[in-house]
Image 1: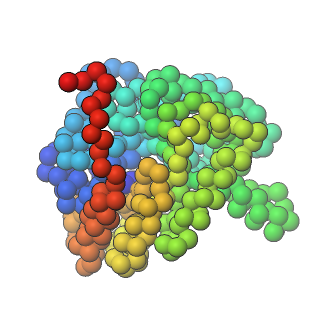
Image 2 (image 1 turned 120 degrees about the horizontal axis):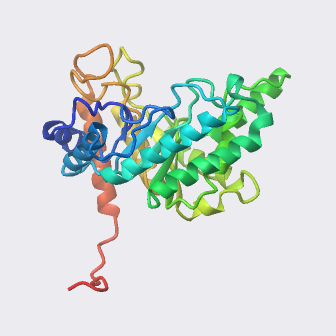
Length: 335
């Protein structure tokens, strides 16, 4: 799940039990640790942020919330012309990876949605494609060097966004792009690194009907296989698509359901059946918690909230029931 949690207010056993056992969340993309590329967490394990994240992982993993990631967004713009800015971003991402490794997290989740200009506009145009690809490779290498075994999550499916922008531009008869243009070469460079695991988190599945989810996931996987001359071979050894769902909280002031619990259960089951590794949920402020710490409107959850929780536990139980039995072989070197 992304959003929904405030690590600074909810790092305690009670909250861990709520998310891990009551809700059934198995991991978070954790906000408020490395906000953006300009945030430097340093390298000192005695730093308060390092201690907090390690404590969070220790407490939450005891309640089944094991697969956690540091989520890093683009809430401040980036100027690809500025060599010093590129170097600082590379350093900061490396420090974030080192922190994730130290705290016992699975890795980093890079949210590449350009909340501020990063892939176009004042950040630079298509003439910078080669530079951005090279910088993406440097950033990827720096993170990989700091945490070689990490899982890298990239969201959203930026190649799909690029395709849609190009189509919209052709339809309008102009060359205007709405902000994702340079994300394609960046991802090409980023995924040229031999990551242990790469996951692309889709957002266009937020409201997709269940029967469409497998098709959308296949199309997303094809985009990354086909983009460039074998540019991503290094990352394809363990590559997967993680469909995102958004069932509760249509906006920050509304905790109501976006679709019915039955529809959520069906979509979640199909997503579980189709995904190789992860399915994720956009938490939308505190829509998943009564009087939660996020969003401007505290208060009760949706009237059908328990049915959404039941759906998560039912789908997880189905998944466990379908899993193959554990091997009876004794691992080599153990007694």
